[in-house]
Image (tube, rainbow, N blue to C red; front, side):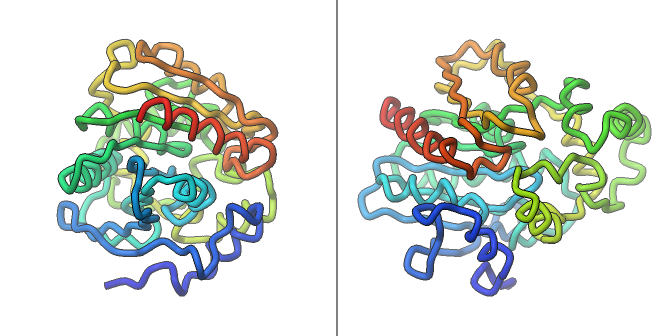
Length: 309
């Protein structure tokens, strides 16, 4: 079985860009193990707590992996929560075979939730960073007993304006999206660097960190099959926001996000009929590691979690 993050240099380099309280050290590393989900070995970072108030499952987006969520997982654990960060297929150290689509992500997330819910009666919250925001929403729609959904953005790629403004360029979206619809699954097995398709250089406002991540084949430098890219741009939403009443919803949007402006999240967020709240993270980029936004992220998340325990 593939080894985990213990010998991976990239995530250790990323820690240098975080404030000290948010950094992983050899003394506070998560447990690492694998779950078998539909024949795939899904790598899990597990931040355990002796007496957890609730469980949080954190989903990364198309530029990250589970280990890169440590910046928020660690303070959540420190405040009494059990936190789980899976590597979704194509990313990190998860092992997979066969055709991977965006629906694979949704099914995988749903099965991960079920696995832990079957173990105990702890309340389960879902947190999604970037594209993980819509994934968390979709998983909440398919899962029972979700106590709350927290996201940094919620991007509905069915909306062409969202696709244009998150793609590498509007031209890539204008030509690429209709083309992929027309060709269907003909070229599904071909892999492309995602940084050719989406505006990956804006994943963080720190240029050095962005370059580091885009070189990493397990995060922003990943190559994804056209099957995944095509279905990510045309997701199947089983419950529209106008009908979503399954859980309260918190949008903690970075205030200086140079990739996904808050207006793109509001296309979806404003339609939600559930109990919802919007908070801006001052000075924080898409990967929200800057002050005071990072500290605000912790405060807003903890307030939401405690309200809904």
